[in-house]
Structures are given as structure tokens and as C-alpha cells.
Length: 228
Image (cartoon, rainbow, N blue to C red; front, top):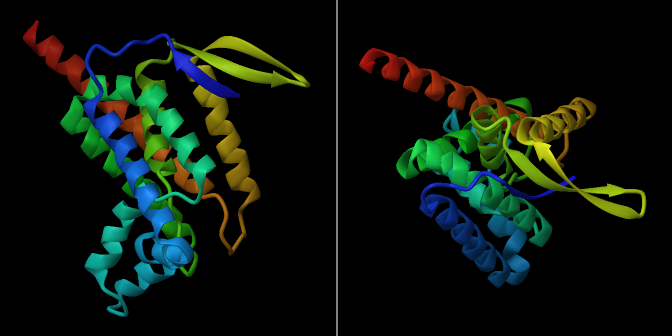
């Protein structure tokens, strides 16, 4: 299923969402510019779990490794990786930013990515394979959207054999299916010691976003009740 757009227009221009997309594209251009040195570039700026945990013992630089937790969010393995992530951010990020405010959304986005990356690293502490991508942070955005706008309709392209059907699906249903597919993939990947898609990072990011938006919603309701 491929989401095309939602029926939930934002009230303000999503400045941070657009800046994040532009920054990701620019960083990808830098990746391509290094040519044959790209694998080493990704290794240097991506998150390498084994290297991160080695920094806790002083074997590598802790500040540098912690920095890669954030730099890894703006790197991508290829065009499809980049386009897929940015497409989801474009559709769902504006409303989440609208709800949180631009500064709050930026902090949330980085926090979601850090939590997702941390969970992935904790599950593969000895891995020497660099992990890159905005997927964990964007999963946080999806979780927040599902919490805040469960009934919003999302126009979705669904392939049925050799035909394509466009259907309006409630956001909670669409994103719920997405989450279940991530969980199944993560369960099937248990025991893997090599690289691949960071499924558990997606799950961690989504749960973080869902819970965080729920807490923000309850806090706003409490404040409103006190004022009234």
C-alpha cells in the first residue's frame, strides 16, 4: 500500500518538515559526490553499534559516536530509500508539526530518531555494519499522527493482482497495518547478526511517537480543564 495524500490540511506552513526534507536531499547529493568513497563516508557518519558501545569503554570517542546517532538520520542507502522516507514525511509530517509547533516538532523528530537508533544498537551491540536512514525518526512521526489523527482519511494506492485501486483509508487502519508488518518483519529477523533493515528501530520510533503524542494530548486537556 502506498499513501498518496491525506484529507487533513495543516493550518500553518510546515517549515521544519520542509527543511528536513531539503536537508536530507542535500546530504544525499553530498553522498553521491564522494563517488567510490561513499561506503567509507557512510561508515564514518552512520551509526555503527559496535563502535558506539566500544566508546563506552573509551576505545573510541564517545562524543563522536553520539554525534553519529544524529548524523545517521540524514544519510540514505539509495534513491528509493531516500524517496520513500521523504514521501512519508511529506504526507504525515505537516500535521504533526502543526500540532506540536515547529520547535517542538524538531526536538521530537530528533528524539524519535535517537530512540529508534538506540534500540537498534542495543539489539545488535557487536555489529560493525553502519546503519543509516531517517526511517526511525519518520516512524515516530507516523506514530504521532496515528495518535493525533486516527480518523483522518488517507488516499492510498493498493495493488490488486495486475490492477491498482485508490482507496481512502482511516489513518489508524493504514498506519496500524504498517506497524503490524514492521513487527512481523522484526520477529522474523530475530537472531540475525548481520545487516539489513532496522525493523526494531521502526517499531521503537513508532511507539515513541504514539506515546509522546498521547502524553502531549493529555497534558493539553488537563491545562484546558484547569483554565475552564
